[in-house]
Length: 355
Image 1: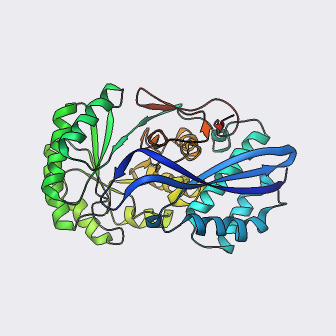
Image 2: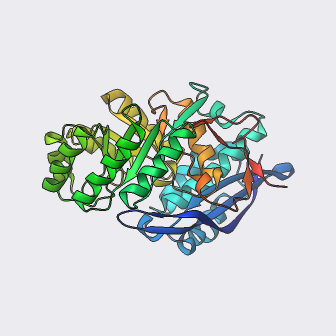
């Protein structure tokens, strides 16, 4: 079955409530929806969320897909994807989010062409659901504590708190949330590269006293020695996010024992294939590997969910489900229930355009 057409559409999905981090204030999720059309009118869908700190924009991703990649693969067979992916990487370097959106559409179409779910193409079923780590943006400590209480009442048992880069305020935020939700709730914090090594080490010691499990990306992404220093002196687990773009990045951090965990995503790594390589490496080294996804269409979350369901090296506790924080998603098929995401039924990704 051949790839007959590729269509790209811009989406602007408003946040129900702005998300503030140490580096961004998100009001609208801007992304590209990619539709892969194959023989008989079969359609597969992919999505990428795009904002400047990712290194890609709507314009650059659209250009990469429509003007560089599309002419190479239209008319080629869906089942050639492994070969096509290698040709694309040779043709154009970088642009991981554009490539990830296209690949998701290919997998969706390919799975539908043989009437199976995407996880079947990825090796089969290991689990049927993922527990969601729910994200809280930077706010006043009392407001974050109140929001955390509401989330726990809804069934969430794991929270991720965004940090601002101001140590005393950040510790107060975590303290208020911990008091509000009690000791039984899993808490991780995400600094988004906001600290230097010594400040991060001091903060980690305070976070340990509050029962925080994981400290994500405490220092800038390129400062690998600083990350190693924080990990060496931290009483809690240190997780890399922005520092890992590829399996080669993951290998460097694991080899140098600079981290305890890696948080990656299909969009950030550029393909399901690359995330599987990272997860294989983590499983071999005894390093926690979890998936995350920024807010946007549930199409991207569905791809991550199928991947997490098929790979034992990926944690059963992931930062998915942020599609629920935006409105106007043109797709249906995924829903968070009692703090968990279950695999949707049906062929392909299991999500579909609204009628």
